[in-house]
Each structure stands twice: as structure tokens, then as C-alpha cells.
Image (cartoon, rainbow over all chains, first blue to last red; front, side, top):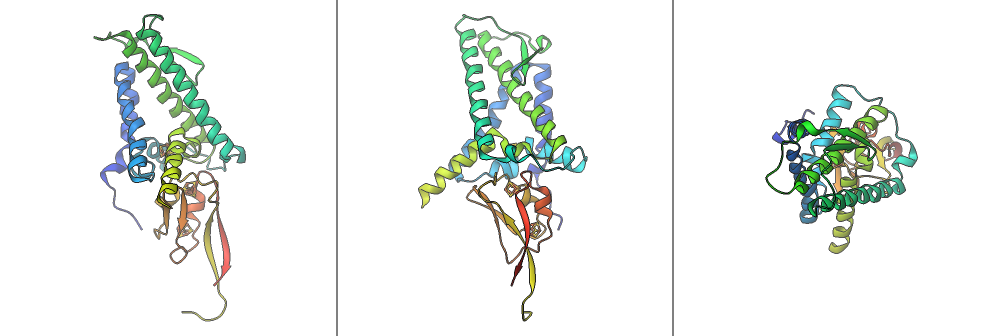
Length: 194
Length: 70
Ligand code: SF4
Ligand code: SF4
Ligand code: SF4
């Protein structure tokens, strides 16, 4: 049965727009906070993963590229990647790196560190990104956060694409830190209701 | 209702490993899958026809098609 396409079935476009905007002006990276808060709010309020099921642009993009465009080998993921240990381990690592990014941003705000106009991919490779920085009216820390947040988004997109090609289209969703966090929220909420 | 023992194919989800991502739900032609409280995929056995679409789609590959008596 073909389901009628809804407006939210086209949100994959948002992924592309976001990455492009950050390429032009890094301050747009701040918009990424929407992708960060919405899933958590939906999970907190409704106790389900409606974000993953309907609105997530990332999931849709991977499904589209890996599914319709056939850019996925469609193999099973290795069992260790499906394990809960990996899921939670990756979440902890991801959050730790996020805190480190916030810390560095704080240092720039405090004037203890110079602004670094780079995007860090896979927490390791620093890519020059100075063309996307045209100054800011506020503190340079505002820009530092943008560079840091964009790094997080780009890194997770790359990981998502790599595991899409190697395994199934939406393999990223198995270890997506946001997906893991919303599941944890749902777990707590489900217990509350009993 | 058909009489006697008939085999029926059903999708079985490993709930413990389910990431509740909803990929399976999206492809099910019978709308037999719901995500129970955001925790795991729940298959409505009355609706499932064992077509295997969900199993192919599941990124964690934790859905198996089992034959059961009915
Ligand atoms: S698991 Fe992550 S990438 Fe997948 S749909 Fe949910 S939030 Fe999006
Ligand atoms: S696709 Fe697999 S991991 Fe995702 S909800 Fe369905 S059974 Fe769970
Ligand atoms: S086997 Fe087919 S009918 Fe049954 S739950 Fe999976 S997709 Fe739906």
C-alpha cells in the first residue's frame, strides 16, 4: 500500500540546506539547536520517539540515499555495533566530546583562548573553514560554538553516510546518540506510567 | 476460518536490542507494527503476513520471520 506523502516526508531537504548554510556562514550552525531540542522535547512530552518516526531529516536522508538511490550494500551490521554496550558507549563518548566543545567555547567567551576557524571532522581532522566566517556582532565565543556545533553535525552526517554505505541505509539510527537518548527518556516515562 | 493446523509466518522482534527507530513500521504494507511506548517494535500478529519487508529494512537486523502453528 502506497502511503500518501506528508509535508514532513520532505524534511530530508533540511539536512542539505543546513550543511550548505554552514558552508556559507558558520553562524547558521546555531540553527542546529532545533535538531537537538525537538527530539528531546517530543520524547519528554509524549513519551515516544515521534521525532525519529516522522520528522528526523537525518533518518530520511539516509533512507533516501541508501534506499531509493541504492547507495547502500544492505548488509547486516556487525553484532557488536548492534549491542547495547556500543550504543551506550558511543552516547557517552559523544556527550563527552560535546562537553569538551562547550568548554572550549567557554574559554573563547572568557578570552582565554583564540577563536579557531576550523571544522573538526571525526573529532580529529581540522579542516580550514575561514571562508564561512564573516565576523560576529557579539563575542567570538558565539562563532566558536557555531564551529563546534557544525563539527558535530558534519561528523555525525559522515558517520551516518559511511555506515549507510557499508550496512543498511539507516544503520546510523541504531547507534545515533539522539535516538539512544530519546529511548532512555521513553524508558523512564514508561516506568512512571506503570 | 480454515480448520486444522496451518503454518503462518510472523515477524518476531528481538525487543531487547530494538532501537525503536521505526524503520520497520514505515515499510510494513499491513501497518502491523507500532512502536510500543517508544521502546520496541510491536507486531500485531493478526495483521502480519510475514512478508519480510520489515526484516530487510531493520538496520539492526533483529527481526526474524518465524513459522508458527495457528
Ligand atoms: S535515530 Fe537519530 S538519525 Fe535516526 S531517526 Fe532518530 S534522531 Fe534521526
Ligand atoms: S527497524 Fe529494527 S531496530 Fe528499528 S524499530 Fe524496527 S525492529 Fe526495532
Ligand atoms: S513481515 Fe511484513 S506484514 Fe509482518 S510486520 Fe513485517 S512488514 Fe509487516
